[in-house]
Length: 580
Picture (tube, rainbow, N blue to C red):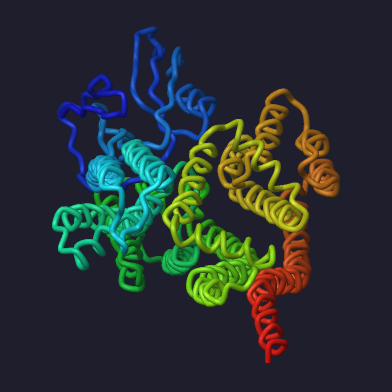
């Protein structure tokens, strides 16, 4: 069987698996994928694709397979398709190839079509502007077509095209931005169909609505299969933790793995997780070892999970390892929920503030200011500014909504750059309130993950490679890489941590003590417990500080708007009283 691997730059050399039997059960995952050219152990040329977090990790991964890379190029963010296959020697292994899912391809094509439609709408608006200029007057109820209006439409068309390109490159985060953009374009086109029986605009609205629906469908599909874009995260810690705990209990009772998976399938509630568990049962029943089968479902079982299971299989203590994994995932889920709860209150307050301001500026202020203008009352400066802002928001509402979405798109694109991501992660760690919380959360995650991996019997170097993927911050990942390199050079773990400037000094000294006493795992667990308590304190402190700040902010903004409206009304009433 010959596979042709598709990338945005074309097809790679076919991968030949003649006579190979495969299970056509695919799990999609958005990961960094690298094309490489290399020399094998016999000095022959070789090429193919490999998934890894960085080019260095890719080279190291291939070196273990006795493949020595001469050239490596990243195909960032493409969809990777994983499957267990048998090679010529009968050994089962996981094969990775780049292939964009069909639903993503349809979204990209429809996004390009939507961009073309926006260009057509721009030309139609330009033609309407010229005809109005020739006629010398416009319809009384027609919205004015200005140069800024045409500029907004042009930027919108270019942005939609960029969204389509991003989706074609496998960027799942571009799906929901494209869906919101399509809905914004859908509203005026559908309105023209209803109010003016404009069937051309109705056709346009059909394309925009279809694009929005297809993007939502694609996003739901990726969520259902547990896809993870360029990361090593488990999409639903709560579900996976519960399933792992049940599986550990069944295995401890002496039930075979395939039967234990069958029992767990009946307990799983999420349809996506049920599909994954059925797939694992089929793979295990066919003789694939459990860790290799888990590799084909990366959105649900990350590198840490797979390697701990592999270590448990090698030591014959799979049930104990799964129990440890379940406890770890449960603790991580509890920690993440604490952080989300801390962020939830300011996010809700900010959202309410924005909605209140939009409602006032869109519905209340125009009506009141219209009355004031009809009464020919001189408006003070704050009211004039308010009227100007209100008119701008009413006329160019598309610009006000689309600019933040476009900014988010470019921000996400910039985060794909290693240099920008490193600067951004360092910046987040220095933020006054959130930085302290994020740093303590990351330190806790690093400590407990490293301890769990060491307790499971994994070597320190392999454990650090896994922790680097889990920690989720580029600044901390750089420190962990330095720790990894220092161990290779024969030095200790604590020295790079002390010199990092990212980890608190206490962490370095605790790890140094653990290395000297031979109790590194216990000391790491103590560090994790200490920082879990610090996270609780930081959350309480941040919530207590943010609540009054948000109340003051809302009072200033809403009070300023109300004052700008009340002042001229008071002037009008005082003039009426003086005239009376």
